[in-house]
Image (cartoon, rainbow, N blue to C red; front, top):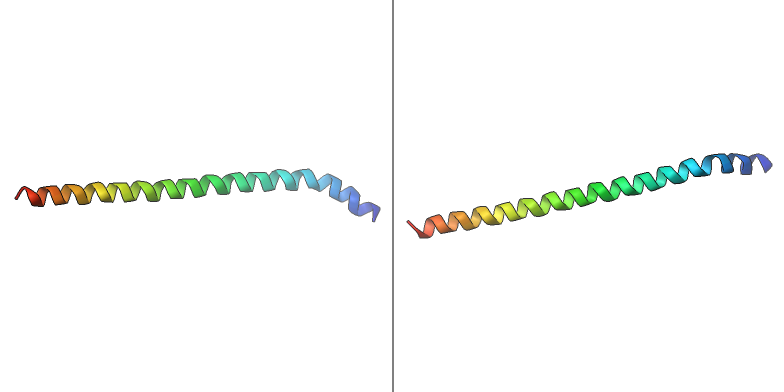
Length: 58
């Protein structure tokens, strides 16, 4: 059992840092995905508005 705690003490910091890194990267990628989706929706809305305006002028 003593070996378990020795290994745990050695590996815990690396596993902890890896977990924090994974969570940070996951948050960044999710935010980027949401931002791209929002930007695409805004562009589509602007394009629809422009198309509607051009149809109204004809």
